[in-house]
Image 1: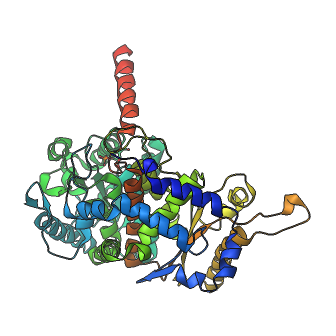
Image 2: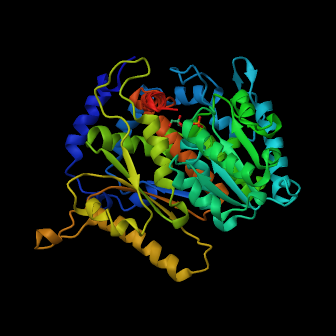
Length: 507
Ligand code: F6P
């Protein structure tokens, strides 16, 4: 496969970067009074403002040529139609099928996946309604008040983010998350719960993840200790592709929600992995989340590339990573309820694009996915923003704000947003001072995403935007964004150590 760095457009972009690096962001605004409007794209409740980036029409034209030459549109169409673009695992990549409202068939190995998705939705909707409306009772006949999602990585981060983001709209049982195999995680929670009113959802695509299985076994012991072995059926359900392993754990097949190998873990919150979300905000709320994501899918698949939000976000990221030498991306949600965004995006971006070989295994000689880090505004301002403003690294930042707040504390919201906008302004325009220690150099780029309100729909739009952004970058870099073989070695070594330790322990 031709490497992106071998294309002549790559060299042209290098020259362009050389030419424009001295141009300040302020001067881009001075030259074009319409810049803020021209570089902002609105899509049902999401406003994406790219104006404070080091990007001109000329640079964009070059980046769009790069996207065309890498066949972003072709790969995108292959992805949504079920082609096995996850070539190293020979799998389709169909998280978009999970959220479409269309009934058009989507084939994998000659089989339409849509009927299975629709029947999963029916099963999920019934289960969620049964729990929330107190028809699903625990072993002692009491309704479920607490749900514990036990899973890790993609079986935790997405649902955890969404449940937390929508917590003001929660109407169901309280949903908790346990991921860490450190017993402090599970044992920090269990004493606060009543086994009689607690439901465990064991979420593991493979049902082989050691951390999840150990947490699940300990949770089971706790429950069985209180309510007896027969209680497991009413207090444990699971989400997995691995029916045999789920059954041998002791969870009835009818209490298992299906998953498929064409849903990647970090792209799975739209599947039954999102059952915690549906339990919290209701199945209708979950469907709104899917509808928001479907809107972004539609936009991604149909908007011209120069007005395509995920494509622009991706190209701007490539521009900085490969032509400005940045190694990081800051994610700064100015919303306490979006506090888990940086962690979620760490997995989405870094597990997807933390690769150093092309799709056909050739080593690459250019940078791929950046370090993703971040913190909630305004908390981050009092820790690492100093580094953003005056540090020696060039670090672009994504700011995420919510215009209308439903916390009924207008003063808090006004202060929060004032700080967000002030940060964006300070990063861009800086401040000159006779004292170099007090000088803010400015000229630091930001992309600003505004949600009109924080609700299931707008959240779906936002999360799908990031998924597609990561995808486009993977296509440009010629890597497979959908495998994660790098994490396997550590798992294997840990297992070997445990086996050795077990063998050497006298019984
Ligand atoms: O960390 C590797 C990984 O495979 C992630 O990609 C995945 O989200 C996580 O482990 C959990 O996997 P599972 O859902 O199979 O337990």
